[in-house]
Image 1: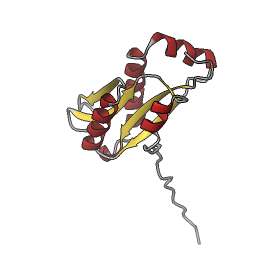
Image 2 (image 1 turned 30 degrees about the vertical axis):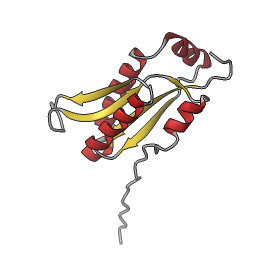
Image 3 (image 1 turned 180 degrees about the horizontal axis):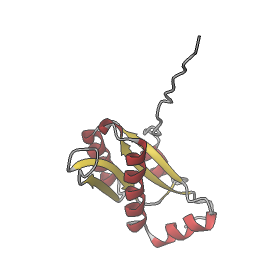
Image 4 (image 1 turned 90 degrees about the vertical axis):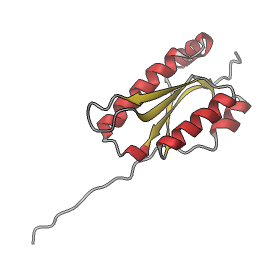
Amino acid sequence: MPSNARPVMYIFVNRGLNMSAGKIAAQASHAAVEAFRISKAPLIKQWYSGGHYTKLVMLATSEQHLSTIQEYLEARGFKTALIIDEGMTEIAPHSKTALGVEIVDKADEHTRDTFSQFQLYKDEIRFSVSVDR
């Protein structure tokens, strides 16, 4: 592996399910664990050596979009792990919530070409102000 490698873990989260922040955190954590599990040992070692454990949480807009992302990534040679919720708390059983991708080298041209088209997951900040008169 090149010394200029930039190991990173990509996690896709399905925004279309309107999960709470806590639910998103749990599903992204499941995806991260599975992504680590399917990653290659040399990249894991380099990921650790950097001390940053970079993870990028990316946007999927729906279950169909998440499935399409998975098919696309696997067709381009990346291993993925789809997270399907049991439906015990706030969403329907068997909902596709997140997708973990093996740790990859972000400096690699194939990786850059593959992942550059995706958007980071960003939530709108919502707040309200009440004024006493």
